[in-house]
Amino acid sequence: MEIDPEAVKKLRALNLKNTVIIERDFLDIDINELACGQKVKIIGNIPYYITAPIIEKTIAERKNISEMYFTAQKEVAERICAGEGSKKYGSLSVFVQFYADACYLFKIGKKAFFPEPRVDSAFIKIVFREGKIKTADKTLFFKIVRGAFKGRRKMLATFLRKFLKISGIGVKELLLEAGVNISARPEGVSIIDFAKISDLVYNKVHNSKFKIQN
Image (cartoon, rainbow, N blue to C red; front, top):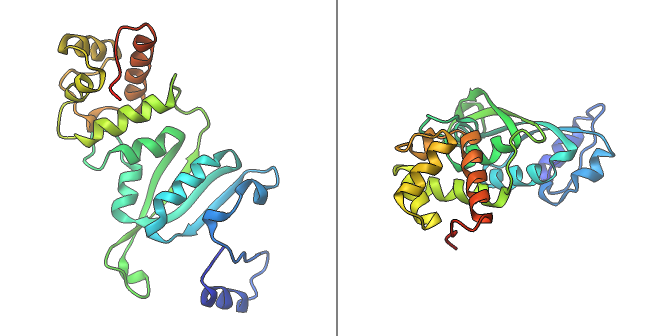
């Protein structure tokens, strides 16, 4: 799939076997239409400036995709694949890994490309796992994750006190119930623990004990 006319021309000149060249923007493609009821694999050297939109699209249409292999800017690839405890771990890591297993395969030096970019790249693998992480309210879960990582250097409890408009004691009880250290920072909290926190908040809000900040 390619939208650059010059690249399309060169691809067609190769007369590749078992290959159909689609001259369209990937972001405008209906993956379900291409999949024809089957799970597809997506492999690509994607434009780095639309890495996020491509990831968002594939996650939205993941029911038709089994796995993805693609190049990304090295720093972005590290963020996508990072686990808790890493300086690279953040809301992007949680967003992707909520739906899939993400694996950093190998680095690709900038000299491998022409024209040579300013940054190194990496090749990564994403395997979609339906229902990998379960949570009562996905919107609430991601709202907590995004808010927490805006202050990644601060303790998670500090964010929760403001977010929930409850006392420090209430936050402490919430974190203890979730099995999370009261002094934990967002980068040290696993996706599963974020889900536990989110579900506890969801249950307490629905029991009218807490008030969520808009």
